[in-house]
Image 1 (cartoon, rainbow, N blue to C red):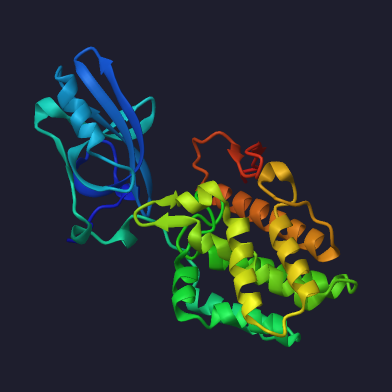
Image 2: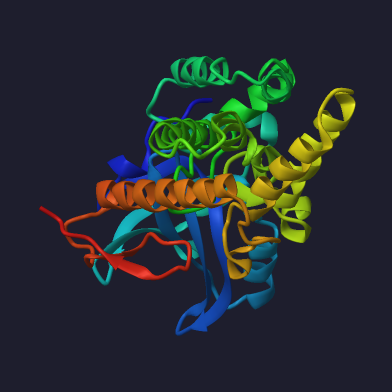
Length: 326
């Protein structure tokens, strides 16, 4: 059964009988008429708070709450109300409203997480064209070992770049990678001291670890491997395995590429195991920083509502940045 109504279409006063994915949970609390809990639910068009107003049976409310997990898709019977100027889905137990959790084969995950607005195949073709300009056969061979692997490419095309703020949608990693590779190509023309082949290669591969960083079903969630190790280390292991399989890959080049990948976040407090110590590593770090901050700023501005404060999170440090909203 396909969704018929999306979050962006809901307005105050609407009766709702529709499916949404659970994005966040807040534990039950007591109120004057019993117990309630909050969820953040959504689909590919946006998110909206949901409040379940239960009765005095605390155990019953908690049992329902504990049976619902982030990533679940639920069928909701309720009404759109407004609280402090914000629309929310209200479900009132006494009015026979309800929540039902659906099985995996009862919904299409693509309806619950946004996708890039750009053409994925066109972006991938452009990335391949840039990769073909790498003149060093060993580096081109490394890049090709990933980009010609059908299983890897299928996952790469679908993976988001982040959970929040920048390219946090299906296809986001490809979108981000193409931006960084194009920036690397332009920068190598300006700074001829840079090893262009090495910089382009690192721009293409440095975030491949993100294909193992996220579980993307109805929401974007970090894997255990990502939480314990991080995508930079995962990526370095992935490319080292490929390089080790190539008998003619120079050890010095392996070391340089591993360093660029491990240092591309720049600072230790940003999760970088090493600070950049070569020209190409410095270049990629600042390319990455520019791509993240500018893309995040543009995305935040596109999502800014007239009633929103003109201060939003767009930086790696989580610092609020002002937006001039024309």
